[in-house]
Image 1 (cartoon, rainbow, N blue to C red):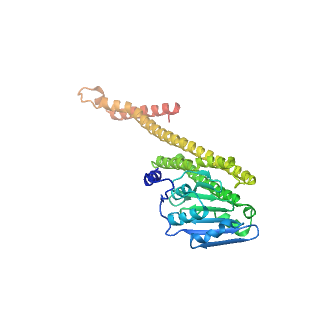
Image 2: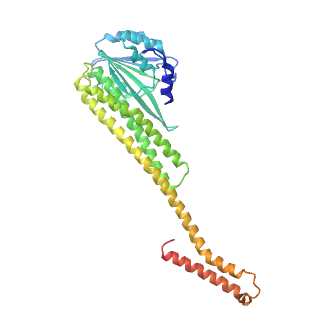
Image 3: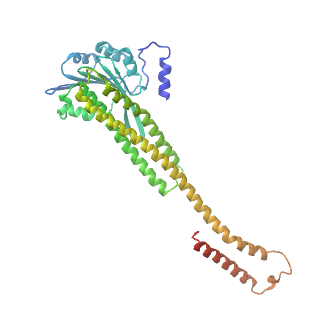
Amino acid sequence: MTKLLESVKKTVGLPPGTMIHVGEKKLEKPIITVFDYDLYQFQEKIVETVEESFPYKDKPTVTWINIDGIHDIESVRKIQDHFEIHPLVLEDIVNTSQRAKIDDYGDYIYIVLRMLQYKEESQEILSEQISMVLGKNFVISFQETIGDVFNPIRDRIRTGKGRVRRNAADYLAYVLIDSIVDHYFAILERLGERIEDLEDEIVNNDDPKIPHKIHSLKRDMVYLRKQIWPLRELISAIQRNESKLIQKTTLVYLRDVYDHVIQVVDTIELFKDLLSGLHDIYLSSISNRMNEVMKILTIFTSVFIPITFIASVFGMNFQYMPELHTPHGYYIALGVMTAVALSMLLYFKRKKWM
């Protein structure tokens, strides 16, 4: 929400298409990597300037240009001029608070979605905006920083394994989206383990930090749902799109991605329900423990009430109480008290109150 408000604040009063970077500056200098390939050859290199990637635009091979670091507005503007990208697209690329969506501009398609990664040390979910421009024979991807989930795809391109080098640029865009969606399952698996650990913790103890942990996990689920839910609309829009840039053979694979997104969303909803149930279980557990304490206190009180009554009667300061002059009165009183206590304990035991 803070990021969204920052985006709105920075762009108020500016004309449409004005490129203002919204987000953290995570790299000093953009890193531009170029993968150029077809079925028979492959080339990979890191270019120093964005201009070095321009010759790949009109090559018959498939080119993947990946840019890490979008704060350099000048480099992004050069890409806009050479690849003839609409200013509104570039505005969305440098504004990192976009929701997942697809825009078809005829000669190219703009796709934006969220890449999520799980930080084990702080148990935090990190979100990064991934923007892609799909052209006839190229894909340009924009990332905020170094580090992504695309290494398996890079390895397949290098080794020629799989279908990537046999297909066009639309298939490359598909495998990038599919890799992002598949990584959602890894995050959900880790969160599922945390929920299972929390279940065991609730059963075994009544740590006062448990409600905070439940609330933290529920907040993660709300965050995940917000990041992933629009992806359903994105994949559905791609499937309905009749663009010449997306082949029918690729649509079959996109249906599989759509199924995965539905499964992810359903799992998030399931985890939310589980966490709500865990909160109820925790409250019930606390209530049961309190009832156990109250039951024990009630039993002790019930046992000592008649004993206290006997002791209070013999403790009255009357001079002519007949029992006071009995030689063995003290021991008789103690015996009566003990008998009463044992009788009540036996009664409670028979009633299964203890």
